[in-house]
Length: 197
Image 1 (cartoon, helix red, strand yellow):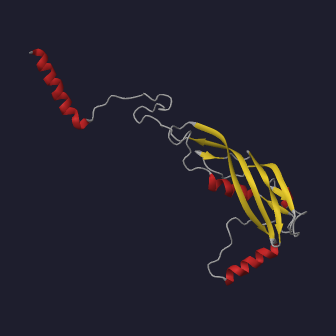
Image 2 (image 1 turned 90 degrees about the horizontal axis):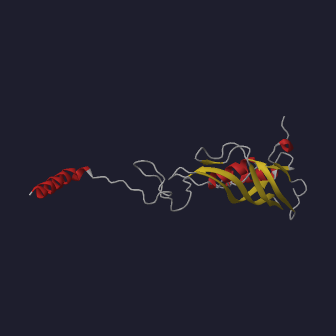
Image 3 (image 1 turned 60 degrees about the vertical axis):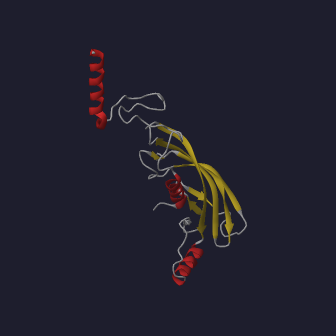
């Protein structure tokens, strides 16, 4: 059986658990869990996610405030340029004590329509460890851009030949609208006739 402390995302909170008013800081890298994003935008499994924050104990659990930073791979959705950049997000989450979890469940049954917040995560059964795996995954899945751009005014690719319009801003194709093709041929014919005269 896997022990909570053996998880690469486990943080020891034993020194502050069940003692309101205490705080412990977290300033460390954790491996990115699987399932964050896709081929267009995401974080590769195992990449280091830096967590800089603190657990603050209150009567019924621990409140966690942190800034998360991770290397994100992405592809510009307009010009398909590969992007590698750090992405940061701020999080606040609640880790209730076991008894507090039961109390909340009881309240939910009594008060119709009231649900436990999505930003609530469980502590280990003994209350000594907080596992950040689900928190890291949820935080980035919710905040990564759906349509990343290399820059806000990216011009994209030429729809006819695929050349990058950011690198060749003056690129053009001389095309004739087929709706005016007969007029263009009439114009050429008239020009030839006027030259012949």
